[in-house]
Image (cartoon, rainbow, N blue to C red; front, side):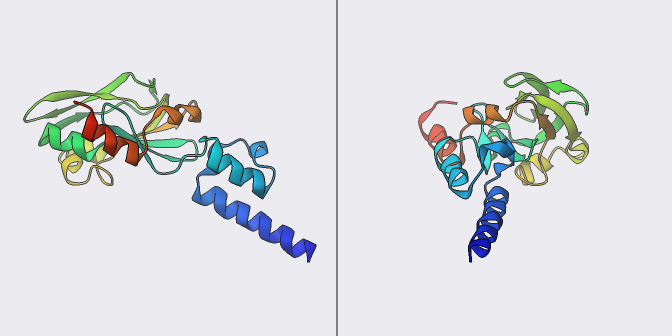
Length: 172
């Protein structure tokens, strides 16, 4: 019976790690199922979902890789995007620093990286067809992928709920 309970706890831990993106934690941070639950609910260092900056970039994290794009609000504010200059693969980007540019029929906008790291991929389809940003900003219109230097930087970003409130209350 004890072995069965141990196996169940081990498998539950694996599921929680997968579901909640706990791969951001050092393996030693979750020595038991109880400590894993406590870490997920209290420390904020395990963060799944989409995260936003106050400059309207978004970030989705899978392990140590973050995918970056611009929010629906940003693409609507820009209008029809006609040009995208994305950071080159292999380049280093810094959190909060300019790393590219987007141009639309209305305006030009710099692209700001939400996290620091090494660019490991860029969406060449967006460079060829920038309108993908307008038609699918969260799926096909992603901009680049970065290997995170410091996963803790995610803590400074807004979750979807906070971003929605930000859009309601802050002049942008």
